Amino acid sequence: MKLQKTGRIAVATLAIVTALGLSACGEGDKKETKPKATTSKVTAAPNTSYPPAPTAAELNTELQKALDPNVPNDQKLDMMQGVSADPSLPQRLTEAYQQNNATITVTGVTDLGNGTITADAEASINGGQPQVMVVPFVAEDGKWKVQKEWICNTLSLANQTSPACA
Image (tube, rainbow, N blue to C red; front, side, top):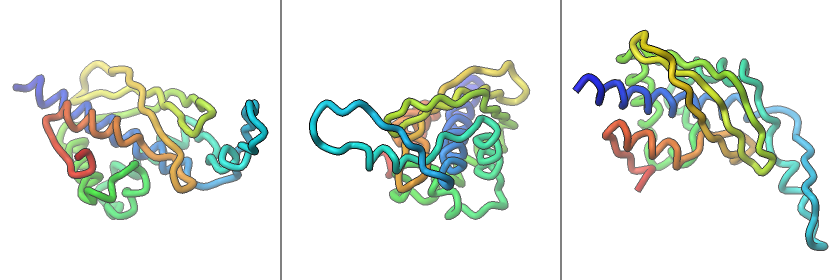
C-alpha cells in the first residue's frame, strides 16, 4: 500500500513540475525558429509564436510557485494544458506534493523546435532516492504548458481521474 501511495505522489510531483516549467516560459521574446520549407507556403509565422525555451533554473522557480499553497489556484491554471475542464487539478497536485514530502529539481531543458520542450528532472518522495523523469511541455497561448496527455497519464498512475482527461 505504501508503494501505491509513493507512486501516486511521484506522478503528482511530475505533473506539478511540468506545470511550473511551462508557466515559466510564458513571457519573453519570441523565438525565431525557421524550419526548412517543403512547399511555397510561409511557415515562419507560427514558429515565431513559440515562447523561448526556459532554462532549468527558470523552470525550477516556476515549479516552486506551482507547489506553493499560498499561490491562488487560478494563477496555476495557465501552467497546464487543458485544465480549464478541471480547475481544482493544480490544488490537488499541490496537496499531494506536500503530503508526501516530495522534492523536484529540473536538471535540463530540451527545445524540440516544434512547439514542444522536454524537461529532465529528478524527483524524490519522502526522502527516497531521486528518480529521473522527463516532462513534456507544449506551447499554447504564448506560454509553455505541461502536456495534457502527460498530466492524465500521471493522474492515472496515481489512481486519480479528472474531467480534463475525459
